[in-house]
Amino acid sequence: MTVKRLVTIAVAVTALSATAWVFVIPRLRPHVFHGVVMQSETPAPAIELEATTGGLVGLDSFAGKLVVVYFGYTHCPDICPATLASLNKALDLMGDGADDVQVVMVTVDPERDTVEYLADYMAYFDDSFIGMTGSMEDISRIATAYGVYFAADEGDAESGYTIAHNASVMVIGRDGHLRLILPPDVTADEIAADLRYLQ
Amino acid sequence: MRARRVALGLLAAAVTLVPAACNSSRGVTVTDGWSRPVPPVSPASAVFLEISNDLDGRVTLTGASSEACGSMELHQTNIDDAGVMTMRPLADGLLLEPGTSARLAPGGTHLMCLEPEVFEGSFDVELVLDGAAAIVTTVTIEDR
Ligand SMILES: [Cu+2]
Image 1: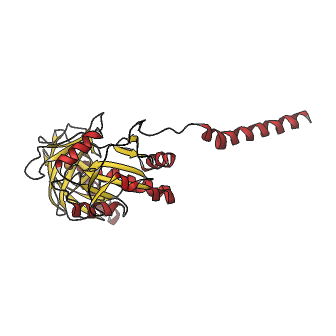
Image 2: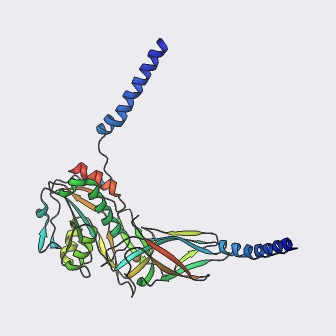
């Protein structure tokens, strides 16, 4: 009788704590971002460049959306396609939530990345991705405002120059303020988790 | 009589097989060749693989070629703590001391395929080595 009751209590306690661990505690735990969280008082630096969607496009065209800004270039064979593929997978993971996310790649190689060329390149990853280009002066100014360093490197005769660039992924919140900087090796799951939280 | 002849034949076969087996395990081996899918308009893609040197001497990977690429170069990617990524040619090649192996992987060393012509499936790459004969390996295009 007592043993039976003890067993019942033990089972009930185990079930309760299991429920707490699985359902309650994860919700109480604050979201842990996978990048550097920014608490900026001022709106994200303006970006107005020639876009693959046609004409000059500014950040204000994406008002109300999360904007993911990536400074990259199409001659980058290693990290850039991996990051763009991860961003595409992250949007897939977000389902309908992805409708309120705009991914933008600003080229740091405007000499070679024309708007037509960027259009083909970006569409391969996701139809919704936008590529942006402009004059070297404009791009330098915007990159600097975002704390993104880049510089053309001497390449050799075959490959031409390559570009050293900051491969981080910036996330601008729905309020237009810079919210998050994700490292280049962030995974699709991590991106999706952070974007969902920011929505 | 007949059994003896068969036995001798088997022995002879075994004797010739043994050195062959030894040779294949003591050389340079290349495994796990892969390349990330890139848009067909891409001017470049990166090839990754694992290479091991089981010879008694040093071997240097100096370059590569493929019918699927206009040209190939050995490159080194670096990402520093600030997230700045750089890519440079490995001018002296990739040195493999005897008994060591190296993995060409994203964010590290890669074979850069310039003007790629194959964007799905697989393609062959010939690795040029200093200290050993050239090796042909198959590279699979896959998203990892
Ligand atoms: Cu490269």
